[in-house]
Length: 215
Image 1 (tube, helix red, strand yellow):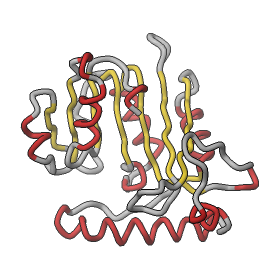
Image 2 (cartoon, one colour):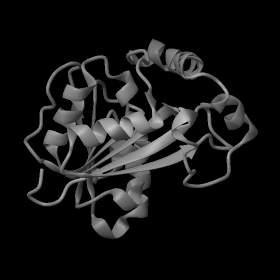
Image 3 (cartoon, rainbow, N blue to C red):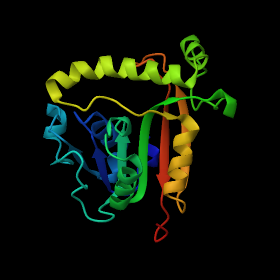
Image 4 (tube, rainbow, N blue to C red):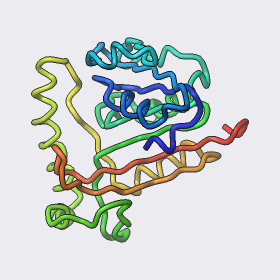
């Protein structure tokens, strides 16, 4: 995802321990990137807290983001959208308000094979993925929700995270982003299920790219 991080400022919304922020800084050392992790609590690990390039801003769930219009060049949402309990359209538009050049979104996704089989961005599909894709969309949703609930419930007891909720079909989220940001370039990359992954759910990366002055 680092290739899509534009500019010199990044808001990692719901960034938790700071894993994405730390790895992005490693991959873009020449950028002198400044990262702000915004979350409902400060869960940064020691490495993130020690980095001079990583700041923290506490959020209140359900409130508007406490940032100026286009304050950040880029904004990242890594497995955050399905945790958002408010209206997703309004939330994504609020995200777009504070991002000047790019929004990066990772999500666990369902796949409607009646719309064709998505082309994978990396490795070939695993046997497990083929079994997942044989499920109906409702069964896929239930499977993702169950796995995500089990994993997040362990964290929720300590961190107070909202339980997971709404998951999108791979192309349906693409359609939503194009509808919400009609003047932007929307890139979708289907990654499927990784060989080494805690969650046995397909995942995808979405990038919303804004032209200067065209938002």
